[in-house]
Amino acid sequence: MSAEVPLLSVRGLKKYFPVHKGVLSKVVGQVKAVDDVSFDLAHGETLGLVGESGCGKTTAGRSILRLLKPTAGQVDFEGQDVTAAGREELRRLRQKMQIIFQDPYASLNPRMSVMDIVGEGMRVHGLVKGRNALEQAVRDLLEKVRLDPGYVNRYPHEFSGGQRQRIGIARALSLRPKFIVCDEAVSALDVSIQAQVINLLMDLRDEMGLAFLFVAHDLSVVRHISHRVAVMYLGKIVELCETRELFHRPMHPYTKALLSAVPKAEPGKKSERIILQGDVPSPLNPPPGCAFHTRCPVVMDHCKTEEPPVRDVGNGHTFVCHLED
Ligand code: SF4
Image 1 (cartoon, helix red, strand yellow):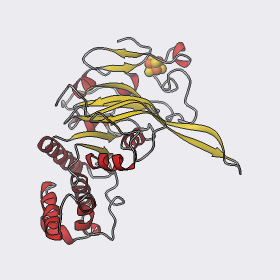
Image 2: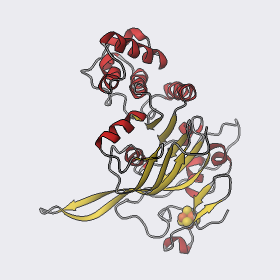
Image 3: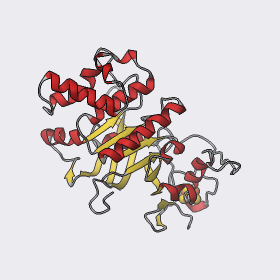
Image 4: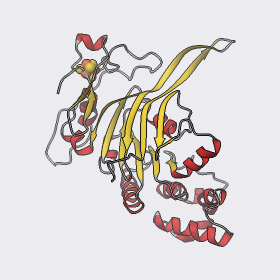
């Protein structure tokens, strides 16, 4: 990993969705799905982005790739401003920034063969010329994701969920990207298959020098693959640090609650499960002060009115809370 110039730099990223009402479709509010998110990602690094569903992590990933247009903020990829990129520039950038979707059943066109699904991008971007060379490139990619190259003319319905996700990975790799958003990429798979796909992604990352933003709702899923983890709550990152540090010294009460639900690696070691009361509040009307105060087990009076500060505990570990470390 190069620590100097980040591959990806995200600053103050916001994505708000207007809420319309009435026959005139008047804007009556904004859903603040992503609200001031900042982080860097180094070459070859994996950042896990975790939080309950609806916390904005998927929207953040898609806004970074400009599959959704950000409301505010800046995303630089290799020093190039993705948020301001024109059509042609964006096309070139997209080649280097790919996505693997959650649902391996819905993300592959059932009428396209593996050859077309995996080969289409290379054909459109002119990376490989001629049908034979393209077929060989697709076969090579299938081998890379540990699928039989002989499957090249099969269709998605002929594969299991895990195999389909491997086809999705081969498609993402086909444009030789440097950065991939894995958007809940293993969430729909059985636990044993999840482990296989995570191991595959780690091998590919190391072999090809890829960087991942690994979006997941489950901390145990990001534990092995991520170098660092960012925890999101109601559109904001509330804690960010190295993975080992997060599991050994969580600082934010929300992170502590999420971690208490993760099975312990050490047999016999148990910690008390922290049950959070209530649901995640609506991002249309987030609570004042600390957005987590309606569910925080250690809430204080001023948490309800004052926005918490960012606390830096050193070694790149930050959390957002009124509590001191
Ligand atoms: Fe809990 Fe207050 Fe910290 Fe928010 S700021 S997480 S309510 S202690």
